[in-house]
Length: 146
Image: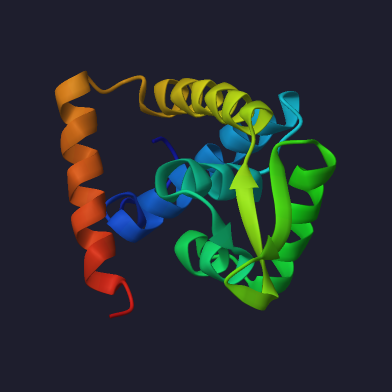
């Protein structure tokens, strides 16, 4: 890291911020190539893992603001990746369900993310990648709301 002050390069916060810029670009470009956005991935992944959910549940699980969930679900419905229907157990709420096309889109997006991980973490062997992931998850857990 030539021409960058050592005061910066020895700080994990600076390094994480710089890597985040690269990670965001890799993921954005990859998702754009398959007609998707990050919110789409979060919602499809939550539906795949936990099953049908209300839009409010999706917002909480995916850490997406309620109005952004509505917009993203509208886009996913228009693309045929999710279905939205009134929740029979709660009249004022909609239930969102993953479709077969949505599951296929999720697999495409998984491949995009796998490639982004490889591009970003290419210099690290698999064991170091696992260690880095574990350490980042540990630090993040410390800062999560309880």
